Image 1 (cartoon, rainbow, N blue to C red):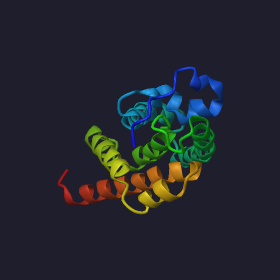
Image 2 (cartoon, rainbow, N blue to C red):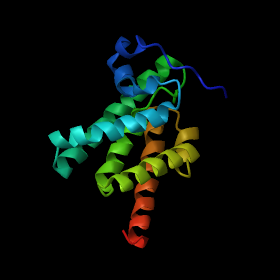
Image 3 (cartoon, rainbow, N blue to C red):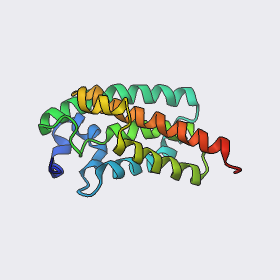
Length: 165
């Protein structure tokens, strides 16, 4: 399937769901929008944690962001005519915020998490592949990346357990 071009900038302001689902514009990148969306999550994470330093408050925020994301991705996918259009990156952003909450805060671990998350998001090991190919709605769009996040956290935990630093 050919890669679809990103929607025009004015698409973001047509509906609030578009602004959210397209990662406040980060998904409009013509090159690797999923990677750009994940980088957006990484850059914005410290700011969010400054305002929500308690893990429980941040976890509640993530659950709300996931729920809003299901609806926003559904609405935006319908408007774009593709359930999981490349410009939709909220599904990368929210799960990667969750990853950053769970991995060590040193830059090397965050970089590792970024690379592993992108790997798992692209490869889509089961059950992520199931959600990506069979659940054609906002929930499916969000869930395949939640599973990639789970694989990422597990991978980082294994590296942390077996590496001397």
